[in-house]
Image 1 (tube, rainbow over the protein chains, first blue to last red):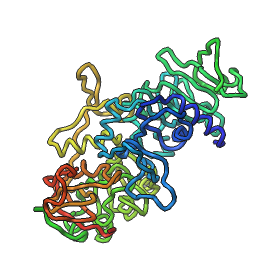
Image 2 (cartoon, helix red, strand yellow):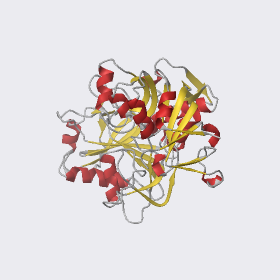
Image 3 (cartoon, each protein chain N blue to C red):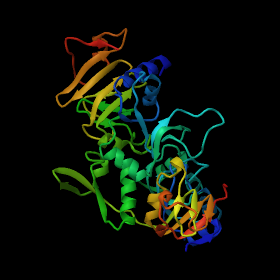
Length: 217
Length: 218
């Protein structure tokens, strides 16, 4: 994905983060949000390998092999940080103590189902902590490209890949649109600059409710 | 008192076919010296209980690359192509377990519990073949405790009673795995006298620890 699209998605995710939130960002695209948090908003980032208060990458030469994130990359600890074991980390996650988690996806559907951990016969990386995160976080946001590399919609009527969790996604942020997930289905909240509602609807396999006013982001 | 042994002696204790719970998260906090000794002694047919299969040249990935693992309960394989290839070739049996569930199943064994009830995995392939328990108005999957013969873990400092301290995010699964080994072997940076570790700083009490190995990484 082009850098400007990544930045756009990162900025839009950041808008969802409120002062005081405990947040877990998935590896990759979701971490873009870190660069766009408004001044005055303080959130605490969890790293599921056992830390609250995860900070930015260290300066070159200051890397610590004992201070890494869930992707194995070097990080720093901000004032107020804490370390804990993996069972405590997942008690935080599964127990509903994380306000927002943002994850990537292979597919999302109009029932709020998410598939992001395997493609049978092709790719089996395992679910890692994703199933616990999606099950336990108070709000689950999916951040991803709207269509796959063949141009097919990743927002479907029904996920065809093995699910990560059932009916847990509440917001979808893509390079084309922001879509709210409710029991009744999907609502198109915002579309990206330069696109029309028709273009977004056409690129979306799932049924979208289009309100009178659709904002730009 | 716990006994101090060498990494080679630790590996000699672990028989082929053993069930080993190994601490670490993508090789951070992995007991590298004991893993190297297992590779050197070619201790094979292991059943491995780990958060992740790490990298081919770091952590438990080295056991996989050297074909010492016959089966594993693990949450993430994405950083290790060798384990995915061995799985696809039918050389290794993998049970993928959500990470939080894996930790609780291991902890349950150490804590004398038969299993845990978790909502993680409901409505997914994880629940297939498992009992769903309705409790306090909600559905949960019954996940059985995971038993291990040996726990092999990494800590920062130990006293001679086996009380352990850890370093930052290298703590991860280590204190949990340590609880659950019928025999627990801990690789450490430093062994100090009894009384030198502040009791408030002890993250894993020595009651869970049987053997200490000084790390070759120091």
